[in-house]
Image 1 (cartoon, rainbow, N blue to C red):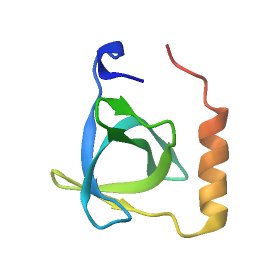
Image 2: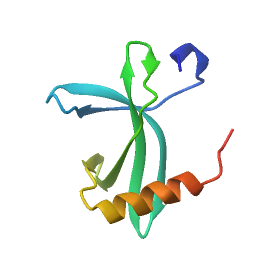
Image 3: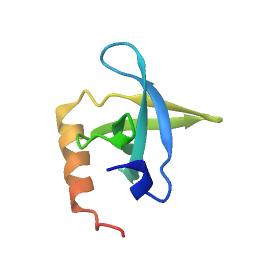
Length: 89
């Protein structure tokens, strides 16, 4: 999906698996069981990658702290909940 095809996209800088900072598009966020989750995708050039990632986050003041979901059951529950949400236009 090219940027020119999008009205507006929020982004966040996070370290990738290679240890370098990468820019990610914030595709969606939601709450489940009192926890906040965010769906992101890396930005490659002027394109948003098709592969999405699901992270848990919390807000501390003006900062957002992201956590990898290590518990497989929590990840599955959050992914299934996200998949069940209605698609917004």
